[in-house]
Length: 133
Image 1 (cartoon, helix red, strand yellow):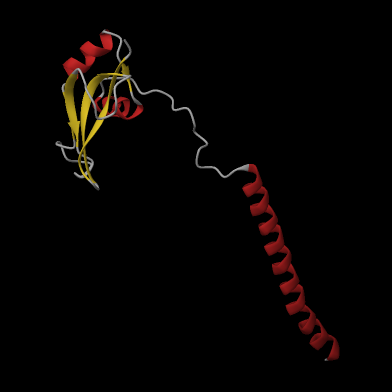
Image 2 (image 1 turned 180 degrees about the vertical axis):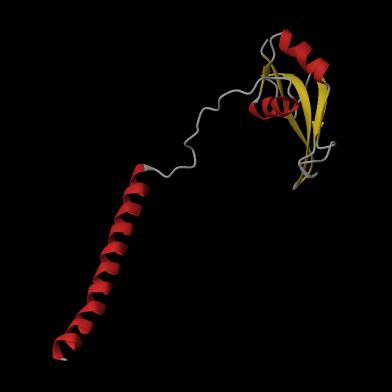
């Protein structure tokens, strides 16, 4: 049996409230669970003590029994100092793709060429006035 420590959603529409539960991974997200080990209320301010409450001893017990942590729960435990911080997989997630980068470079080159042309056009009448005098 694959056991996970994960979030189970509660609360009404647009007012989320989560229970941190130990559950069989085959059960539905909000379905049957083995044990409730904490709560998470994302509506509270980040510095509030009531935002994340966990029974750390029970979570450590379940980890010794082979339970796997979900990403969000592992972040909570990292913040609490219970689990060592691990490397995240996709560090370049926010960077645009290759085609978007190529389009941005082309746009920058076009803008630079237009700027240079404007400078040359502004400098040409000044040179003509200097030559006439």
